[in-house]
Amino acid sequence: METPTKTDNGMPIAEDMVRGIDVSNGFDFYHVFENFATPKQLKVRDAVRDYMENEVKPHINDYWERAEFPMELFLKARDIEPHFIGGIVRGRGAAGLDPLEAGLVAYEMARVDGSIGTAHGVHTALGMTPIAFLGNDEQRDRWLPRMANLELIGAFGLTEPARGSAATDIQTTARKVGSEYVLNGAKRWIGNAAFAGVLIIWARDENGDIGGFVIEHPQEVEGVTIENIQGKIAKRAVMNADITLQDVVVPAATRLPKVRSFQDIGKVLLLGRIGVAWEAAGLAEGLFTAALEYAREREQFGKRIAEFQLIQDKLVEMATEVTLMQMMCFQLASMTAFGQLTPGVASMAKYNNARKARRVAALARETLGGNGIVLDYHVARLFTDAEATYTYEGTNEIQTLIVGREITGYSAFV
Image (cartoon, one colour):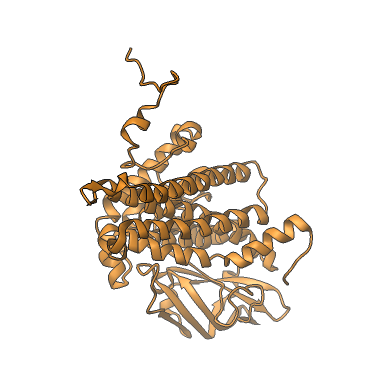
């Protein structure tokens, strides 16, 4: 047996400490996932990692620069084994993942690209989950099998142009006329809407109750106008749209029956918020590993820049933040599995990870110098995607108020 390298005081040194860590297959400095995830969970992670590294990464920069959704790359996800489309939704072809597996899917996608990760998150957490949890069997049978194989892609129409963070103040209306509803209003920042096969519109009926109304192939429905938002500096390869609804007629049977208040929507948003916490951690790891690999190769003043103290300082801060984010995500999955998830728990994870991803993004860009603002090294794309992650699924200001309400017992907002 080979004797391990030792320090002056006789303590063994892990081999990684001698030669530097290998991040070509991911970064898990504290062995958070390797030590505690099951073989099944790691199999899901590795399958998504292989897909993102080999199918998406070589091509995504061109799509991002053109602000074009990579549909052919996205659809390849349906052929991956083990199947992961549908997240925690069970039955009707959905993957039925556990909370850690679902988190690792979001993490691995974001580690390579935020646009693909967002498109998948919208489809799964915000498209399939409301139908699965808030719909009836007929609705589940009608839409979930086709969504599980990406025949239909989901979209979630909640945010409105004049409301933003005041999401509970829904202005879109649903007026009952016989066996139909007539929808009027507007939505903004709706991911996947331009090509969605299933669009869930949230509106308020004449009794003041909130309802979710499923519109199949909305692009073909009279009165629905969908226009992609142009000029984005982040998440450019995922389509976000402005939607106008003018006297849109939908059958009453498309209304999700288990929704009457915003609290029902909140249960879905909670899952989306968890996904963004994982996404922010994945983005941060992608940024850190790109910066580390660059620093090991880039030479200045006759040395690789990884040898300089100031660069090591940046790398250590990035590595530490990524590790802390990973541990928070792992515990988040554990609490979800044990039924201990609360709005404050989810918001704290989103608040912490989105904020730290922003910091890691800045440090990674600094490490690459001028090369940090060009797409070739992937850092520039992830840098801007981290900015978007900081805002969506609830701004960090709103997250702090949710956590504050839970720990103090007092609400500082409506």
